[in-house]
Length: 224
Image 1 (tube, rainbow, N blue to C red):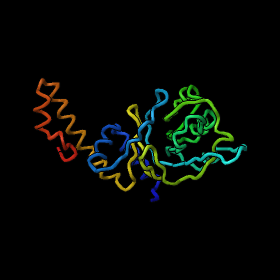
Image 2 (image 1 turned 60 degrees about the vertical axis):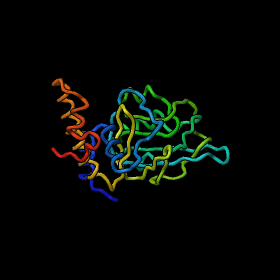
Image 3 (image 1 turned 135 degrees about the vertical axis):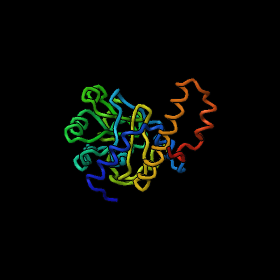
Image 4 (image 1 turned 135 degrees about the horizontal axis):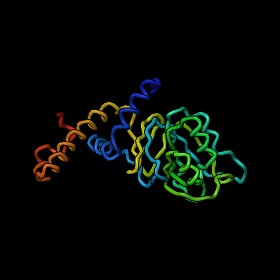
């Protein structure tokens, strides 16, 4: 699904209003698995949102030099790169040169199902970076790009090119592009419900009574 630049900016701004726990609760209510298990923030600059550009790597079938980063110039400003390196912990697919280029181009962040390196450089540049592993060994002569802008799987969660990704200190969650409006509507209802409960707690009221009053079991249905 092709989206205009103005549409992308609108959805990114709207989803930035909500944390990954809130978005995850919405996806649960819709029966959608969107959380990326085993993916952790690297450094304190971990907040990002953007439409996904997917990349998939495979093992080399023979030893030769291969420039594994030949996808980077195809990524648009504001996108989030999501790389499937099959969770490999022995070779990297992201380092300081790619971070420098991503920052220069305005890419929103990178998520890697596998290993990354040069963590301090990314931190100094305030670039949002998440991965399942950190290791210094290069991917050269070990892996090569298999495909890009294709469906990938991260610990069983399917990520499609063009989906929306929200990441913060709690982790990363992917929203199918066909569900953006529904997720936003339910997220707003959840936040309103939870705020009513929090306000009640601050006023000294019972948590259990507040949860019952505001139908906490299904907060996405509450329109206040």
